[in-house]
Amino acid sequence: MRNELQALFGKVRMAARSLNQLDDAQRNDVLNAVADAIVRRADYILEENAKDLLRMDAANPKYDRLQLSLQRLCSIADDTRHVASFPSPLGRVLKHVVRPNGMELSRVSVPFGVIGIVYEARPNVSVDVFSLCFKSGNACILKGGSDAVCSNRAMVEVIHDVLRESGLNSDVVALLPPGHESTSALLDAGRDVDLLIPRGGQELIRFVRENARVPVIETGAGICHTYFDEYGDVVKGASVIHNAKTRRVSVCNALDCLIVHEKRLSDLPALCRKLADSHVVIYADSLAYQALEGRYPARLLEHATEESFGTEFLSYRMAVKTAGSIDEALAHIAAYGSRHSECIVTEDARNAELFTREVDAACVYTNVSTAFTDGAQFGLGAEIGISTQKLHARGPMGLEELTTYKWVIHGNGQVRV
Image (cartoon, rainbow, N blue to C red; front, side):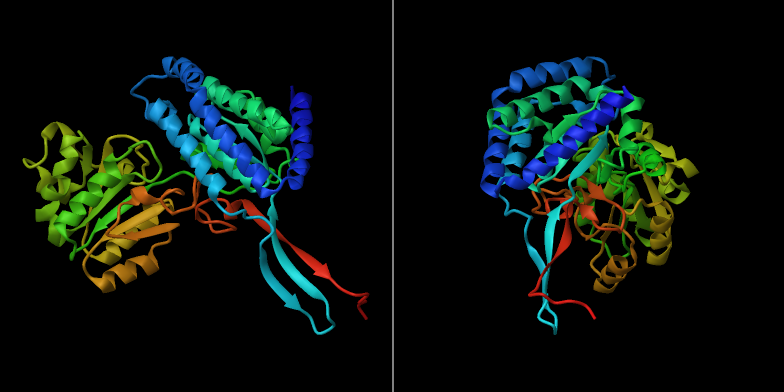
């Protein structure tokens, strides 16, 4: 099987070269055709998705991410059309210099070439990755989780059909078979793959980082905090906290830990009141527990342990930590955060500025829900992931983040002495 996978990687590498021959209008036509085909073949895709759902416990936090619906498929199609509507990220002159000897240098945006994606039970990623990679001139190799094998196959089958109908090489997107062997082969495919991007939980990301022999951009794991400051507004805070926690609990930008200034503990029941309607279990430290006891449903209130902090819950659970000062809140975030998305709720401009400056994260919010950490919400179209590292890209990765650059030099016979 290893030899078969290496042969497949070689085909994708060759197919990537053919993308250089397409202009932006041709790429957009294909993406719009893929969007139409997803809606047109929705019944087939949903039937395949149902096979995956039957194998997963509905209580599993991944279930919501795995589950497709007609509405979600239409949203995926809309995101694909949105990507098609963006200007091409390719061929942009990022810098132009004329040297004293008349030599002209231009730094020009170009594709990476072949991008590999390792992801869990998220069939929408199959289309998001293809659309962003295709628009940015990259071929892609998809390694989805076994939980979504039928859904991913259906998505890629629809894409392949559109590519063939358009007279293009369908090898510009490849779906690897489930299993550890194909993952291992992809992580070792340095000759054919230019960049690896893992999307999933902390364990998946750690495994890819520690075992890949291909450059990696880390995305996905989100341990997100909201700090309700001494000068926070209760109405704003309650709304931001509820939205960040409950809008969609299985995503990486969902709230995991509320930090509350000890002077505002009397407001904690009001801040958490709407969470009870969504049956959110709270793991509270001793001071927060005392503030909530009798004012938050007992069946949903538990004492926090050390494991309550630094956990990405991906469910209707969250921790509450009391801080004696903004510095203590910042120290807690530095110790337990994942550099994804952090928020402060405050009416004090100095504390907002301090928080924004001191927090080391891809996205730092003031009085805004962390649920907005999303490529579409940032105006980038779909996203290939949320980068939590600092090399090359940080935050939502859209089209521009899927390009690198090369130097193009023009002259008239200049030689170096």
